[in-house]
Image 1 (cartoon, helix red, strand yellow):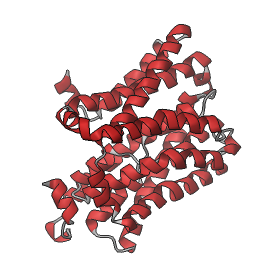
Image 2 (cartoon, one colour):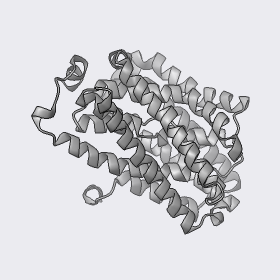
Image 3 (tube, rainbow, N blue to C red):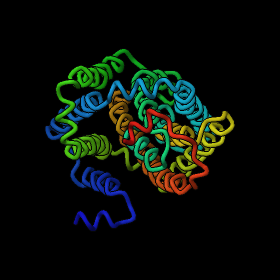
Image 4 (cartoon, rainbow, N blue to C red):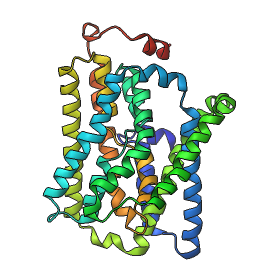
Length: 337
């Protein structure tokens, strides 16, 4: 079965997400089961962010953060360009598309970048891996603060507001375990390095639990009856449009501002991606009492679109001729070694 999955022209994790959504529709958690699922999901999120903190090397952060122009450029793409585009689209379509789905689209635009896939694609494309690691990590750290603030600033018109309880929940569920992971890293890093495969399953399993909980709540409350195929098609088109605009803008502007090819690659992959791993846990906190399953649907669709698009772009970058390359930075060379 494992060999069969690896041969399919589709990400196996996408199959897992689809299977989880199907399980939520067929066997939604109700009553006591829903309470247990909420506790398990909360614990999974805490574990997920603890592992993020434990695996982030302070040395790599120092190496990458020294490239301040690149880091600032990626942050502008993630937390300025994306929100502006999202605001334009949601305001233009507020009388055409379901309001909850538009809220989800706007939520996509205020999220931080991904970590694992941004680094992986940068490495495949022979880009500046050290800068990508730092940029994606800093984006996620700042996202814990900036995403809730942007939700409160830009999404009040859609019925979402930032509250002190939300900030407290984020601090307890996301920031505290991440900080604990950083503090304990010197003692547990060697063990984590020896069990990277197991930790990968923990990462993905945690997200599957969160997805199950979000969609299960949607089934029980009946919100899915509000989604039509037309709305779903429009959201896919809008996700695709957002991704295409930011991918094009990140590549074009990085060249215009004189970044080297390796830096351009890091900018393209870090600046155009949005984190489902951070986004779904945040949605559970920020949108309590609302149809979270519907709100995160645009994010799930965007996540898969970005994987397919970036995989193709990474292969194209990787196939460039040696004469197109620029010298590899010392920090990047040490990482590759």
